[in-house]
Amino acid sequence: MPKDIKLAKFAGFCYGVKRAVETAKKLKAENPDKNVFVLGELIHNTDVIEELEALGIKTINEIPQHGEGICVVRSHGESPEIIDKIKAAGFELVDLTCPDVKKVQQKAIELAKDGYFVVIVGKSEHPEVIGINANARLWSDKVVVASSVEQLKVYEKEIKAHKKVGVVVQTTQMLKTLNPIVEYLTSISKELHVANTICQSTAMRQSEAKELAKESDLMIVVGSKKSANTTHLAEILKNITNTIHIENDSELDNYKDVIESSNNISITAGASTPQNVIEKVIEKIK
Image (cartoon, rainbow, N blue to C red; front, top):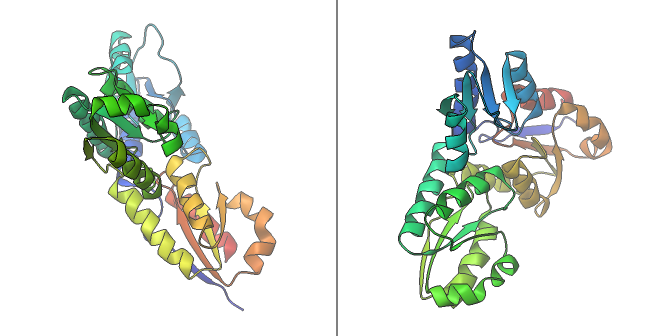
């Protein structure tokens, strides 16, 4: 029986990632004699990082004391301190922070300046959240990161004493993480300001994938295990139907039985998954 294979419309590169990858390549093409470095992986995808390396765009994890050439700030954004360090080292700075992430940073700064106790909903170790946190902390020390009500309860006394609470959200978070936190904060604060900063691309990708999952025997999520939005996508879909999360087509061999026994297969992919990786997965399943 032939399989019915559907690909989600909102699969693969989002606008921020596309812009970062294309700009980095363009920088190298226009400056072939200059070093082009990216601080941290430009996006969470090994294939793309290898492609950039082959073009001479190198990933660095620390800022040298003396730098020469161009240093790119990736789509996740950075703290103001790191941006100053890059300039101080002598690099030419190119800031490719995603515009949606920039908005969260600005909102967090605004709330901190206005005297709010700032709650950042997200994973504290995620590079995007580290940058948002550092930006807000320049203006206030009343800033905390939490991805659950349990993590937030530790600060309950402080929050109650503060009265005014402002919330921003990591762009790739899930609404189901945000909602219980908002409900909890409503019960303990006098004034609550919530900026739902989950980016449109993430929200549309998640809601479309959920609809596809309802009519599929199997969902395949393609993308890096390090990518927050990809792993969240897989988490959401696992509650609806049989779901596998793979980085690329080579992992499909591990799921032969599941694929063979499924008739309606839908495929979606994270914001940092390149088109050619998605296409190879479709080809192999066919």
